[in-house]
Length: 154
Image 1: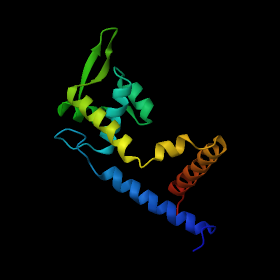
Image 2: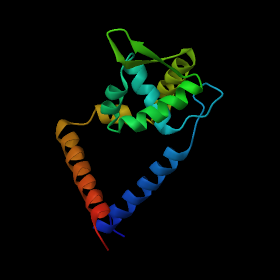
Image 3: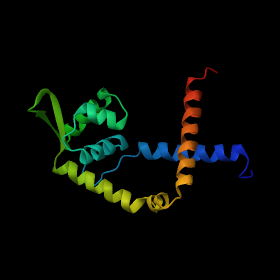
């Protein structure tokens, strides 16, 4: 099929979505004995970049519910990656920090991105602004398309 045919683009998009889903499901160790899911290591990443954040702040940053963050935090706390400290200024709030084990995973994850991105970051950073604008517009349209498909009754 020719590249200019819309179905060729759709097929390529489907392949990328399948690969992304497979990657999301594949746990990794990130320098520790425990395997971490993609959601867990990305929560560790957000905590490492925003040390001392509350559950609400983490949920807002990740774009998920506080309940989802709380569940992941409980598992990460039970496995020794994070610690919850009560905020002395607001006793109803907990601030989340990484333990030494959490920092090991955080830095291993950063290293993984630096070595495994295949030059993607450099490619992106060297794109002309109009190409970046096109990508964001295209991805917004893909997002709208997927949302409509989820809502459609067939």
